[in-house]
Length: 114
Image (tube, rainbow, N blue to C red; front, side, top):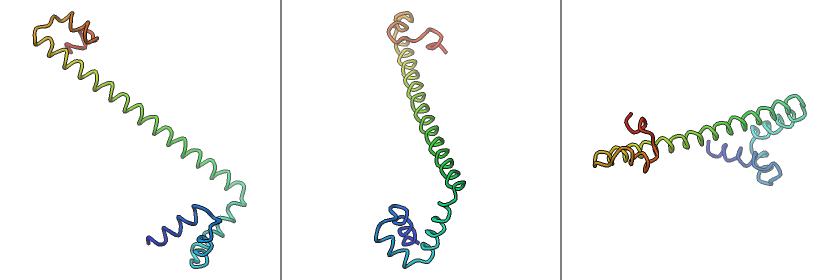
């Protein structure tokens, strides 16, 4: 199984490599796949569909990356705010006036209390 995957990797990596030509001679499956690929590449409709599919996949990957980045950013902001709230509550517990804590930490009274 690993050898078949390796053959396919070489085949897809660079169709001009000598190794690919050798592997195609050794494997009827690989040779048949290559012939089918050549046939499909002559069909303009198929090529256009393949290009559209590739573009859709790239778009989806971009959306996922942006969503991930936004999620990480939002998570960091949430964590930072929670840390500020905890610090503010400890400062109040230690006797610091609420107004001074609000000024130092930069949160509202409602954020600290709730």
